[in-house]
Image (cartoon, rainbow, N blue to C red; front, top):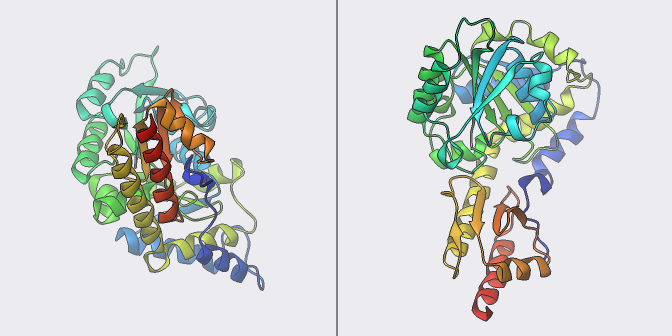
Amino acid sequence: MNHDFRSDNVAGAAPQVIDALAAASTGSASPYGEDALTKRVTARLAEIFETQVTVFPVATGTAANSLALSALVPPWGAVYCHEESHIHMDECGAPEQFTGGAKLVPIAGPGGKLEPAALSAAVARAGIGVVHRVQPSALSLTQATEAGTVYRPDEVAALVEAAHAGGMAVHMDGARFANAVARLGCAPADITWRAGLDVLALGATKGGCLAAEAVVFFNPALAEDFAFRRKRGAHLFSKMRFLSAQLDAWLNDDLWLRLARHANAMADRLSQGLAALPGAELAHPVQANEIFVRLPEPTIAALEAAGCGVYRWDGNLLRLVTAFDTPQSAVDGLLEIAGKAGKSA
């Protein structure tokens, strides 16, 4: 048994996406995003979000987040985010670089989630108008969070309200946005623009694409100079149709949500099985496709010896991630190994 549960980044691409790339490679198309596929992606997203949107495909989540924040924040600005957020922990200073030096201000919160009171308290301490201090400029939310939890529509709206009251725009890192929508069963609009969100970094790579993300602006005024930011940030692809072909296929016929539902269902099956093992403890509610679980060391050793790809988050706390293509047999196989290890311990 050698299935890899370390991340959804280990997965390949959905067959529909591969087929779309092959189809896009025939014939010619206008470069730099002037092609029909790129225009169709914008139309698809306008339909999905039930409003007009301004869309910019890019190749990576780091680019999507960093370029989006650069449109919201001046160099002397502050971006408030969760202390475990990807922009704070895992993007090698890219948000600071692309914003021209804006400061990330991390805030603690249970289960990977920010709370309005904590945000308001942080802003109250910021020193608004004090020339010696960075100025509150943006809030960044992660959906689903780095702990695998999900913000409900009312939670997003409350945080956006607190941010806007502080004069800040709101960005969402949606690397696993599809998993959140699939779990909530809500309209995508309900956790974005209807809740007041300004810009979404919509992630597709983890959900079944090869390398494709989309910066989606719900406030068109914020997108006025974004084309220049994307070009300067080296993400204006000459053959943009190959990014857009991935997104177009992924969004077509609700494929993005069907793939996310499968990943979530496999996470549910895996987490329920793990929680029933002796000595196992889930660190967070499983609300998307990430599982954080503490297991006895002999059980972890048995999984590793069997070739299961598991990620040690911290000591005996593992992170296991299911993907759009995780087979149920792999989930059941891991549970069988872990169960046998527990009985023999």
